[in-house]
Length: 132
Image (cartoon, rainbow, N blue to C red; front, side):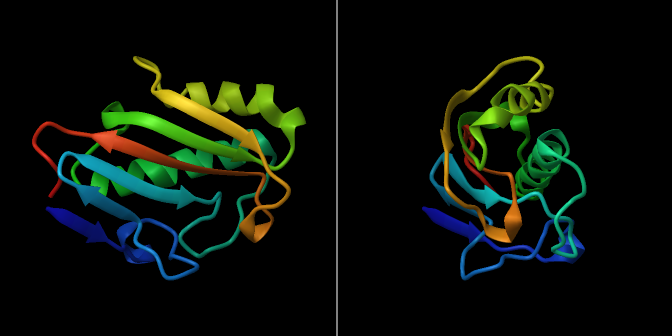
């Protein structure tokens, strides 16, 4: 069974900037669309890679919460960095969100991201009971 969820700023996540769902499930697997370092008003957070990474992770955690999950359900992360020189600072900010177990991860450098962001992250989560 496939499920799909799109949320609004009233739900505590930034609005989608294109025609996509925030999350889509297929059975026990959940795919969360890449999140940007923006607030619910759609504006980019102030600061560098650490602040932007924390905002992206907070947005991802909120999407997971809205479908009944947490970051402990995450099995795979894809991270996209605008500047590879930010890699060490990104890792420091990112790791704080996974204090118990790190999921598998791919991190790549890119030539550009929407909203003038320094980072974008999407993820895959899994639950034995599926998703609401």
